[in-house]
Amino acid sequence: MSSTLTYGMVGGGPGAFIGDAHRKAIAVDSSAKLVAGCFSRSPEKTKAQGEALGLEPARCYADYKEMAAAESQREDGIDFVVVVTPNATHYEICKAFLEAGIHVACDKPLATDSAQARELADLAEEKGLLFMVTYTYMGHVTAKYIRDLIKAGEIGTVRTVMAEYPQGWLYNENDWGGKQGEWRCDPARSGRVNCLGDLGTHVENAVATMTGLKIKRVLAKMDVVVPGRKLDDNDQILVEYEGGATGVNWTSQFAIGCDNSLRVRIYGSRGTILWFQENPEEMTLIGEDGIARTIKRGYGTVTPGAAKYGRLPAGHTEGWIEAMGNLYDSFTECVAAKKAGSFTEDMIDYPTVEDGVNGLRYVEACLESNEKGNIWVEL
Image (cartoon, rainbow, N blue to C red; front, side, top):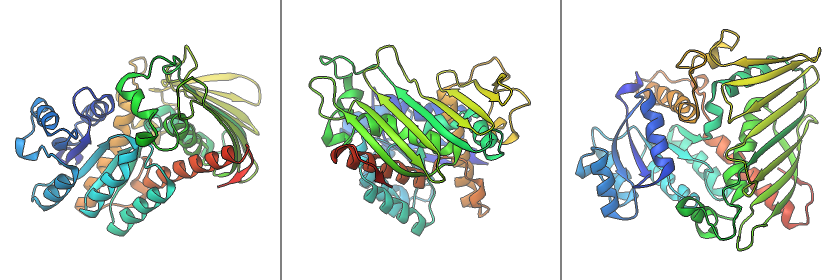
C-alpha cells in the first residue's frame, strides 16, 4: 500500500551522512520513492545531488520554501518531506511544509527549544498531518519487544533505570569531527546544547519508549570538558519519574573507545532487562530466580507486534538502517492510510512529534538545573 508514496528531502546533500542514511532506510522496503529535494543551500549542490539520485531537474529546488509551495500545488506532489538539516533549521523548515499541508519526518532533536516544538506539534494537529521524529534506535525489534514485555508486567514495577550513551569521537581538542562535528559544536547551528541534544534526547526517548515512564524532575550536571568547546560534551542527569521510579542518565562525547554505546538497564520488582544497541539482535531478561536469558530477534519468543518488523531469519544481522526503516514502515503505512481515509491513531508505531516535544522539555529542564547550580527542576 505504501509503495506508491513519494517524498522529498531537505538537506542530505553531497557527502551528508544522515540524509543518505534516511534514503537507504526508506529504500529497504521501498516504502516510498524520492522525487523532489532541496539538498543544500547551494543550488549547484542541490542540482548535482538531484542528478546523482535521478530526480527531474524541475523538482530540485533552490529553496525549501519554494519546494513546499510548489509541491503542495502539484497534482503529483510529495506525500511527505524528510528534514535532515542542522538542528537550528528544523523549526522553520518543518513549519513551512506543515503550512503547505505536507506530512513531515524530521531528524531529532525536533527544534532548539520546546516552544518551537510545541508550535509544530499544535500546527500538525490543526492541519491533521502526521509528524515523525526519527529516534532511530527505537525501531529495533528488540527495543519494541522490551516495550511489550514491560507493558505486560514481565519484570513487575520498574524501580530504577540506568541509561547511558557515550561516544569518543570528539575527545581531541584539535579535532572538531569534520562537517558533522563542527555544526554540532556550534551554538549558532546546534542551539544551547551539543551532547545532551545529540545523545541525551536518544537516552530520554529510549527510556520513555521502553518503560512508559514519565519524568517528574531532573538534577543535571552538564560539563564542557575538552578545551576549545563551547557546548556541553559530558552530561550526568539524575531523574525522578512519576510514580517514584528513579534513574541516572549519562552521555559523553570524549569517552575514548565508545562509538554509539547506548545502553539501557531496567530494574523492576520482579526482574531486570538489559539492552545494548550496538548488539541489537538480542536483549537479556533476568528473572527472580537470577537466571539470565538471552532472547534473540528472529525467534518465536518475540511478541508479534515487535517480530513483524524483522526481515531476516535469526543469525542474519539486522542493524541501524533496518531500525530506521522500521520507523518509516509504520510512518508510510499511516501516510498511505491517511490518503485512503482508513487511518486510526492506534496504527502509529513510530516516535511522534509529541516525543520530540518531550525531548526538548527534558533538555531545557536539564539546562535550568545546571545553570542554577545543579538543583532539582520539575518538568
